[in-house]
Length: 245
Ligand SMILES: Nc1ncnc2c1ncn2[C@@H]1O[C@H](COP(=O)(O)OP(=O)(O)OP(=O)(O)O)[C@@H](O)[C@H]1O
Ligand SMILES: [Mg+2]
Image 1 (cartoon, protein in one colour):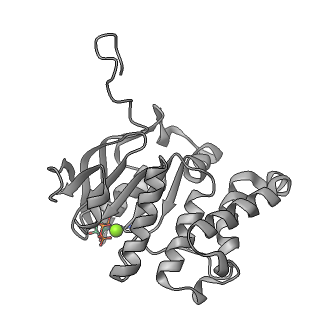
Image 2: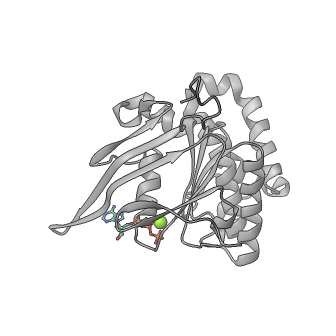
């Protein structure tokens, strides 16, 4: 917090996880994946979360995004406990406060690229709100797809798109409701190197435009673009040393 003595102290985090615990129960066995994770996301930063496959990165990102429930600990957004929200308030957090780019795209196969992006805005508004704002939303969705280099792919269904194109649609979808925080789970994980690089450039541009972003990856090279890197090891997060050049 800024004080008279320290007027330039960093602003408080937008998103703050404290003591997050998560255990999966499978076949009578407990798998303790997160054992007290503390994580701050500061306004405007690109935070990379590194960790080996199976270390719990997706689990953590889902918990930050309000998509699952922790067994212990809290996630606060703008100072409010996300998991005290219920029903529509929690939906609003998931659809509006944060935007999620999933590890495996999760596009709806029967919808076109444009419809996949607009549907997220539709869910956010309900029928009446959607009808009122339809034209504006379609324009914004088309604008985002254009920004993603997909101007001539808007009518394509996901099956007719390449992996990189699908990921771009997923990013546009995550941005349609102007989320404060973009949460991206291995956004380059399933792409060849060149396509992955172009997706990273997109995240760089968004970051330069002030978009707060949390990106999960197992690739230390991907983390080079980040302002800050933390590593998930043994169920806890450790602040990583400065990036090698
Ligand atoms: N719904 C679930 N039920 C049971 N176990 C799960 C579930 N989801 C994840 N796990 C297990 O929890 C551990 C962490 O999974 P998670 O998907 O968070 O890892 P990750 O770090 O994202 O891995 P990757 O880099 O491969 O995506 C893994 O051992 C996984 O098998
Ligand atoms: Mg994962």
